[in-house]
Length: 75
Image (cartoon, rainbow, N blue to C red; front, top):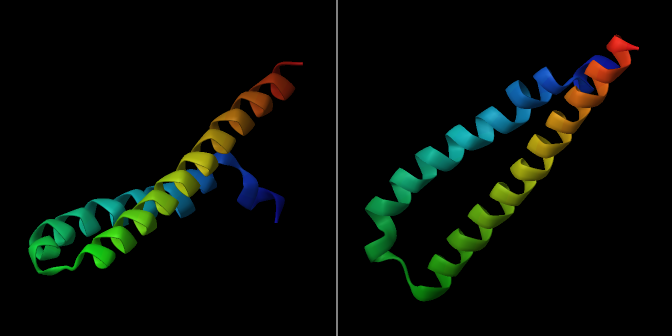
């Protein structure tokens, strides 16, 4: 279980797929946005914002964990 918290796996399992999903969703949003109502646009924006914030938190955690891990191996 501890191996899954390794920064490399956090990037591969979580951050990278979410980034790809956001890119693909943005292409879809560009196509359908003219057909959406105002409340639907808000839902898309909230969902994208939540995904970006969650990915950013995990990305920063992984980079911080990587720095801590490097410091442990040096000592």
